[in-house]
Image (tube, rainbow, N blue to C red; front, top):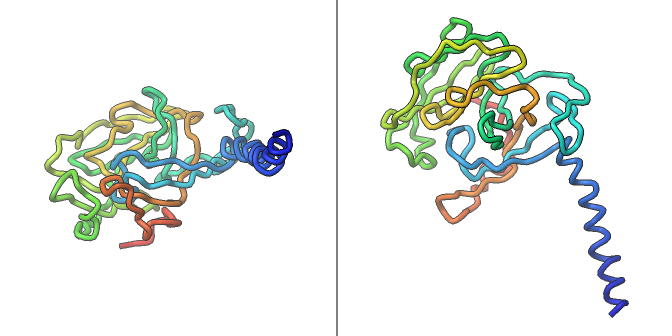
Length: 231
C-alpha cells in the first residue's frame, strides 16, 4: 500500500502540483481564457467561443488581485476587452468604444464619437445567418470606428436602446459596447468601466462549441485571430 502511495505521489500528484503551482499564477497575471456566454458580441464572437485573454496587453497585475504593479499601455478604441462589470462583478467581453474624455452618443444605431458620426458599410447578412437565432432578419454592417473596422449587427425585431447620450467618459474610465448592438447589456445600462477593472485584451478564439447543438465543435473557428480581416 505504501509503495502504491509513493508511486502515485511521484508519478501523478507531484507533477500535477508543480503544474498547478506554475500555471495558476501564470493564468492570474499573464494569460487567461474566457468563455463567451451570450450573443452580445455577434457576429465577431459567438456563444461557446473560448477566447484567449492577454493580461499583459496593458499592464502587470499582482497575481490573484487587480493591483497594478506596472502600466505600459491603455485600452485602445476598438479593442475587445475582458473586464468586471460595475454591476455585480461578472466578467464580460465587450468592445472598447469610448476612451477617457470622449463624448459618446448613439442616434438610431449610428455611433457618434466626439460629435463625429462613424461610417458604416452595409454587409449581406447571409453568411452569418446560421449563427443568428434571435431574429430572422439581422442587419450586418462594418463599423469604421476611427482606424478600427469591425462587424456590428442590429436586430430590428427586438426592443433595444438605439439612441442614447451624449455621455462624457470620465477620467480613468471606458465606455464598452457589444457588437450585437440590440442584444447587449453594456455601458448603456451599467455605466462606464473603471480602468482597474479591465482584465486584459481578447486576441483570439482558442476553441468554439455550438451551445445550440449539444456543444458540437465549430472547428473552423478554432485558433482564429480576432483581428478584422475584411469582408
